Structure formats: structure tokens, C-alpha cells
Image (cartoon, rainbow, N blue to C red; front, side, top):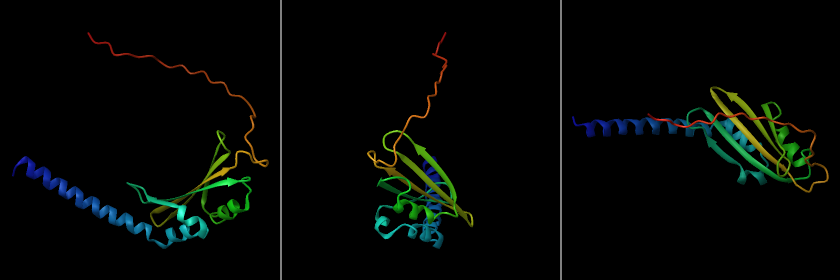
Length: 151
């Protein structure tokens, strides 16, 4: 058997294995738990909700962006966040540009993970919520300068 024939056969086996993995991943999206997480979003938001599956794990990602909020206590946002109240929660806050928080909710079910992230943005001109300087941090960075020297 020639080298080409062996490599072509291996490539074909790899493609069949990848197709099998992708079919299994596609079945994750159809699980009732994923459907329930997606349906937690109001009808008027569902068209903009993104959904994807991790390449090498059993994680389903659901993402949505909510813009133009008066504050993070806005009823539209709080009603949505309450739907994930019993999930593991992580919040990241960003203080550049407009006030922004990412709310990430994670639930592990039968060997799979569903991760819902809601990107929330408050209007930059909101009278209720703004970015303020609360302190100053100074950093000293020391970095080695390297070069290649050949004899």
C-alpha cells in the first residue's frame, strides 16, 4: 500500500470520527434542558439569542445582549436574571466605555454543561448609573529584553 493510500485512508477515518462527534454534539442542542434555557428568554429577545456548542467538550453556550438599560436594576434585566436564579452565577463588571456587566449562569446536567451569558449595557447618559473613579492603582512593570545571538 502506498504512502498516499495510507494517508488518504487515515484522513477518511478521521473525517468519519469527526462526523460522529458532531452528530453527538448536535443532539445536545435538542435536549429539553437546553430548550428550557433558551425559552427562559422573552419571546421578543429570542431572535437575537445566540447558541453554540464547544468544540471539544459537552458545553452548550447561549448568549444574549441587552442594551439601553437605565440601570442594572431595570425590570427588563432583573426579570431575565431571575429566571436563572438557581444556577451557578458569575458576574464580571467593565468600567470602560458605557457601564457593562456580563452575567454568566452555568448548570451541569448529566455530563453536559449549559452556560448562559447575558451581556448587559447601561446607557452612557443614564442618570441612575455611571462610571466613577474610586481610587488609583500604580503598576511597575519590569520586563527582560532579549535577542537571539548566534556564533
